[in-house]
Length: 360
Image (cartoon, rainbow, N blue to C red; front, top):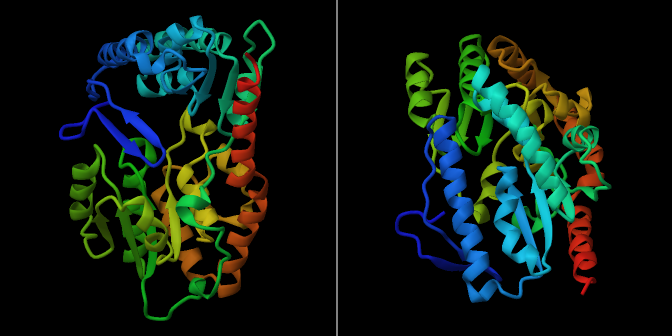
């Protein structure tokens, strides 16, 4: 969508980004639906009328929402192949976003839309094993090419995988430095992280949390820090550009992933977690089923989701860990995720494009 002050078109590396009019607000389900439909209509008109897209051979649709695939219809009628890339699971997202009767009703509709969207695609991509298993249990009435490609850290952004080294050594008299990077929303549990850090600090653990990023919860989280008298233990920094993120993250002792557990996140695999593992940074994470499916207990420091008391205890455990343990767990995490490195995932993605382009 076109943001204020941004051009209609802009080169980004080898790509040309075309931005369409539209807004994104935080309203109710009908507002979301209207905004989605308006944007989909604009995308559809672009593919139908813009001469640059008349010969397009592949349309790669990144959902949410799943029914964005309908925007590709004009190209599909001209013979283009469709890739449906499901970064999240729409039915579970809908129920999580809108609790109660409304959410359950929209969830039923979303599951039917998901099925129809998958039926219209030549290839369906998803991003982790729990979601792939869930989709596999929801048949679409015909054979489906379902491919798993993880959103692993790209070495082009983060450099080669970084082996944990002496930076993990405990430093007497220096506060433990934790970091979170990403969007500040309720779902990602930053309030839990702040409460846990504040509790650990009051109990004698020298710890500091830096929150990198912005989002709708920024002001509320700032007020929480003030209310907890934790301004010395928690600070906020603005979004760090991608090319500077590796250096900034590796200055820390540990990365924190405080995601809440609900019907959607039980199937999610945090990109932040994958970033920390790639950079050899020790991970402190809420014990979501999807995280535990990838990392064994001895590869990270886990705590119970939405439990700041348990997080505070886990921070204390991490602070007391030996240098050997702080190196060993990230190494185990990297071994556990070695089969989902971006070099392999990139090859799978290229193979999809190659096979689709082999058809006339």
